[in-house]
Image (cartoon, rainbow, N blue to C red; front, side, top):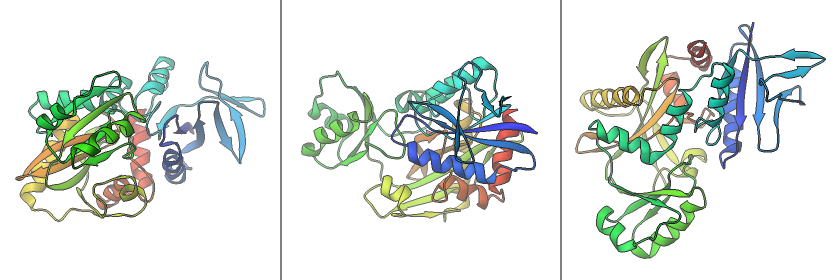
Length: 321
């Protein structure tokens, strides 16, 4: 049987969420087809966990020794949210070693993890988006100019972070600088984005048996002011799958979602967010390592599509191979 390493953890604020996602993968990957190993990636150590025992990873070839036997991996299942999994950093290392992985190539992962760069690409292909201003930590910030261009309310987001860490919705000028400071705690680059009034839809797109497949659409109705951390992980939202929308709108959203996946030249699983303004899907962002916990949207969409999590994860491994 093939040896599959499920990498989880990582170096970002999403460490604990990634462990939960990785555990979901561990639970559902078919054990009669694969030897599945949990690999915790931390700043201080990379270790394989077997029966609560830690075995250090040899970074020369990403192997480990157990009972004097060297074990190599045939496939890497990437369940790391944030750095170094979702941004492609560790995937470049696997590509150098020649070990296949379940995500898109490292350069595409780096692109999609960077909100500014992703928006620039999709806009160049005519995909509607919100207006945005990009700021670096060393920039001189002119609040009045930002408000003049973006308007109020607006969102302030780290450019490279997930799970809604560091995001604020800003209603007046006095809130803008604190929101900028908060976002800069997560990343040295941030985006200030115009508020789009409309329904929020989340769309999973995968490569399934070699073809692009759009999963059933989810409508997100947050109890909070927006789809923040509490709404995502602590039950403070309604997530309706499939979304109660017209066939015409659903077709438009599916077409846009598949087109974005194609434009960005992706592989593996993805989940993108859209706001519907006057019947037109506006792209917000894309997540290339979507949450896989029981509270996450992506597994809900897979089940609604008639795919078990075992089928979904097995497909990811086979597509990687």
